[in-house]
Amino acid sequence: MLFRSGIKATLSINGSVCDVYPRLAGAAHEAGWEFMGHAQVQRPMHLIEDQRAEMRACIDSITRLTGKRPRGWLGPGLTETFDTPDHLAAEGFEYVADWVLDDQPQEIETTHGPLVTLPYSVELNDIPMMMVQHHSARELYDRTMGQFTRLYAEGEQSARVMGIAVHPYITGVPHRIGYFERLLDEIRLQPGVLFWTGDQILDWYRGARPAR
Image (cartoon, rainbow, N blue to C red; front, side, top):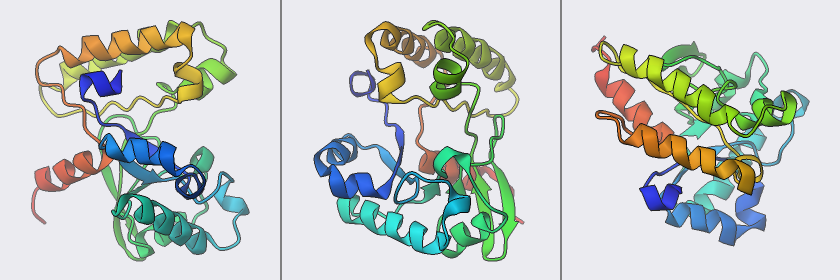
C-alpha cells in the first residue's frame, strides 16, 4: 500500500535489525523511508546501564546501512529515564517521539540544547488497540478517520500532525490490512494533506517557528 501510494514511512527500528537483517532493512531504505533510532536491541531504557553507548551503537548500525545518521528517536516501549532527553541531545538526535503529544511539535530544553518532540500516538496505534484492548479489525479505520476529521477541520487555522503507528505483524495481516489501505486512500484524497516523515515534519516546524 505504501509503495503503491508513494507514501514514505518513518521506520522505528532497532539498530541490530540493520546488522542481522540487512536485506529487510535495505528494502525500507531503498523505498526512501526515514530510519528512526529505536535502541540497538529491544529492551527498556531504564534497564540499560549506559544509555549513550546504546544510542551510539544504534546510530552506527543505521548509518552503516543507510549512509545517513538518524535524526529521530523512539525509545523501546516509549521508555525513558529523567536523563534520556539529555543523552539524546548529547548524541546528536534532533527529535524524540517518546512524549506522546497530541497534534503539534514542541521544543524542550536539555542540558545539551533544545530537543524537538514530535507527535506520536498510543490511540492510533495497533499494539494497544488490537493486542491489549482487543478491538475488531475495523477499529483502526473508525478511530483514525474520526481523529482525522477533527484535525483536518482544526488545520484550517493551524497545521496539525496526525501520527498512525502500525506494525506489519498486526495491521499487515489479511483481515486488517484492507482497513488500513482504505483509510490511507480516503485521507490522501483530501486537499492540503501531506504524508511526511519525521525529519520532514522537523524541518517544517523549525522553518515555521518565529525567529527568537
